[in-house]
Length: 386
Image (cartoon, rainbow, N blue to C red; front, side, top):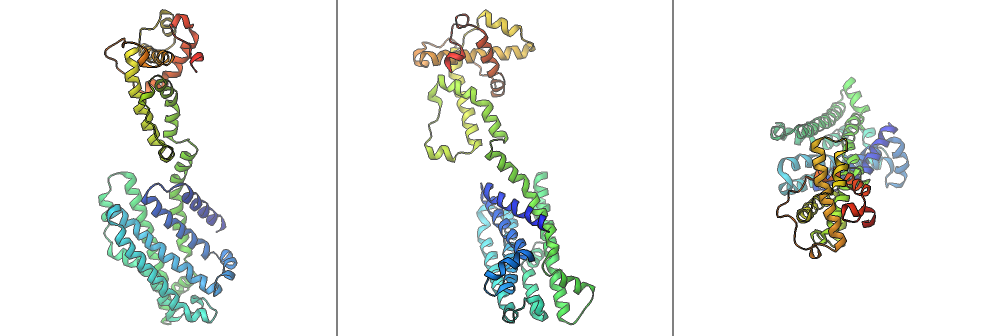
């Protein structure tokens, strides 16, 4: 049990710290926080340490985590509402469900009050009050599942990922509702004087132990999103890697044509995502390349010979020529102070290489430039221009 709770707590802390980019993610975070608090408070070892600081002690704490469970159920219902109605229309019904959950939580405290005054938890007191207590705990989820028995959301899914997400929501909803309903039925049968294996099982599992596998599964499904956010924070995600590959191209081209760089204030720079930075770099590279390309010139024979002697195939050698011509033009423009000091363009039309080709061959072009002398290239070496 302790390893499971540690896993749940670690995933919850990581999720709350790293993932909060959208309304849907923040809604899930609230659900995760309540689910984790519920799981921790129901653990006897943790409850024994928390109970002394709670007015009323362990009996009050028992009702507290059941009230948190009901509120968690309301947020779980909100996931369906969010998926079904979208961001614009889910908030109003979600607030109603949360208010209903709060009312049920207050009712739980009212029903358990006589047992609390006697210094007992509500399961120890038993009777019809405990049956009503269990019924109130399960009422929200049971009512929701009855009203939404048809899997309409599954019919609206378009991708395999969406189907898996909706399938998990249905499995979790049905599993949680079934366990809660069984506990309520067992409590009612026990209050009516019945005693059998089912009522004994329901009473022994009144602390919702059967829900722990679902809780573990739910937190396990959140691990990929946590890992993706951690990768973004460490700049190891695909967008960050692509940004690093494009940076040398962006640096050299925009140094030749600085006017294409969009100047942002500090707040906008800090608030921009990696994907936004990548998009801006791509646009600025293509804009700069379109301008620099008009100043490209044929490569000197010495450089062309180096390309011909390379082990690449003909298409790769041709791509390397085009990239090297663009790189040489960029370095020349930077050396003379930009296009305003470079004179008339050398060519009227220029076809810019693809971004992928630029990123892959830019460093190779610099190496070739470093192998040739400044006199042979009629331009400075990259070492001089760094």
